[in-house]
Length: 208
Image 1: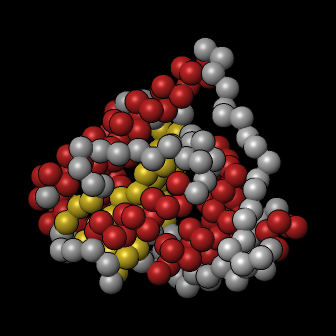
Image 2 (image 1 turned 180 degrees about the vertical axis):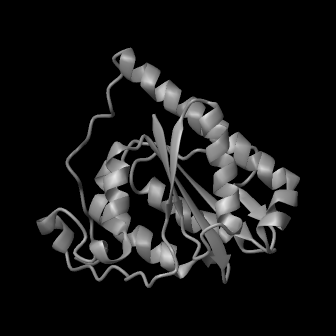
């Protein structure tokens, strides 16, 4: 089994990475493989709602900034953790644009797989950013993995984050909880538990 972790910070090994690495190490100790995918500091296009992904089978912009590469990795992954710094009490702009296109073009590959969000802040805005990121999982039929507290760390540098003893413990607990849920799903499949029955999608507009 494998979990894909997406680092939405422009800093490759900054505070967000430090939190994700702690969760990844806990997953590894539980026998789960991990990969940390770096979004990077390059410009990430926002989704323009062109519908091209429905025709092409991938985001028409994805080869430029890694969205399609991340979707390909999601096809093989069993779980997903999204990490973001907090910018103005919300997830960073790059990871927001990235996730909009990742889920719009490839969300089907993440459906029914456990997901979790992790945020890093110097001080505040963490719960608002978590709420934003968790919505990607909730609209995509993904079980949301929790920890002993909200999935956040605090610090202005990686070293300060490592000094956040509670935050580091939250990341380790998150990793163990993710591993437990993955094994539970695997055991359910082995016992013949099928995915939930899907109904034909109903869409109701507010103005008729």
